[in-house]
Length: 208
Image (cartoon, rainbow, N blue to C red; front, side, top):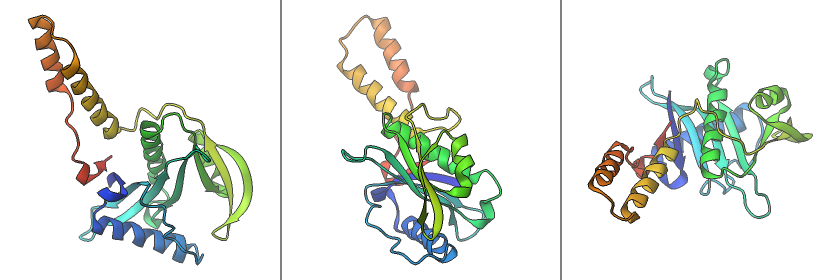
C-alpha cells in the first residue's frame, strides 16, 4: 500500500475523487446512513489515506481525516475513519490511526486527540492510548462513544517525513544566522548541512 498524508490543497483531483468515492461507498452506502457526507470541513483538514497500487485503477483502501482544534474545542479530531472490506482483518486500521497520531503529534504536539469510536471498537482504541469520555450515543445510525488521547509522544515506529523536513529547514536557518567561527567549525557545519534531509515537494503531499 502507498500511504499518503496531504493537506486539502495538496490533493490532486484524482486523489480527491478517490477519497470522496471511498467515503461515499462506506460511510453512506455500506453503513446505510443517508447524510450530507461532504460537510465543509475538508479544506482545513489533513487527509491520511492508503492507495492499493496493485490494480490498474488504484483505489483508497484506508482513510482518516485529521482536523485541528480551536479556542473553543482545542482537541485535534480524527474522524471519517474507514477501511475497505479487503483490509479489515489485517493491521491496516492500526497503521491508519498510528499515522494519524504521528501527524497530530508533529503539528499540534500539545493538543489531545479526540475521536468517535463504534462501541465494539473501544478496546482497539484503548490499546492506542485512548479512553472513553462519553456515550454511547447514536451516530450514523450506530452506537458510538467519545474517546480522547492525551498529548504524548507519537509511536517511534511510525516515520514522519514532515518532522524531518521541518528540522532540516530549522537547522539550515540556524546555520545561516550563527556567527562565523574557526575554519574547523565552518567545515563541521557544512558537513552537517549536507547530511540533512531535503525538503519534500509540498505539491506532492507526504508519502508515509
